[in-house]
Length: 269
Figure 1 (cartoon, helix red, strand yellow):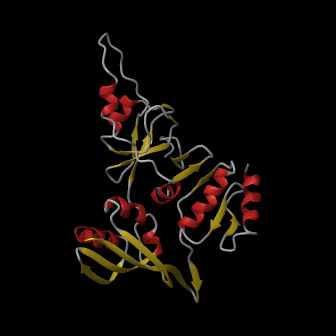
Figure 2 (tube, helix red, strand yellow):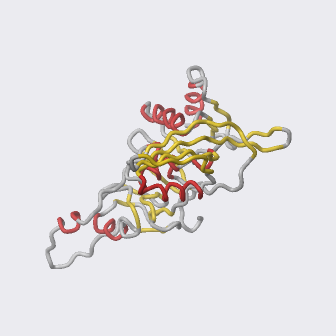
């Protein structure tokens, strides 16, 4: 219950001096502030291992008001990537309001120094690792609070959302994987409104991942179906927190980490 969660979160304040917990908009909500996504992920993972179940919204930066001016945090970012990915990095950082301060190329390795609002950096690390095939390194350092920047685009993505509750089948996943990257394999329980994959386009699509193959008199080898299935991308807790949009939540339980829409029913969304 929310009372147990409240006691557990406020108990954490005794040991973790960098953590701040406040009451949320309702009795069942809490605003937990910490030093970045990794810090929050450690708190959530610790609670998960202790047997707590909770849902987490997308991380947000903390704004400040000084002399009537709204200030927001910004960071210095240093990126090292193979030269072939340099154009991609500049394009991605420009989209997120990153300002290029310095650049150099040595032995086919491009080094960049960017100045970027922290809002633009949320969700970038996971995308950066995927786009550079794990060959790039990214380090950031808090630069301070600056006057609020213009609108910084969030992590733009479309999700594949479950149509109805049931058990996933290889036959249905084979169709669904044509739309994008799947987060689940066959034989897993799902419910309406659960996010099971990332759409290739920046819009949400409702998919049926529980559809059964119509039975006929012809025998068919099941290997032919399962061999064509692409292994799902299993998201860790930090990756899930970075991935979700403003209308999505991460459902954290001792056994699993799931993604879902805030409003589960398609008609209500």
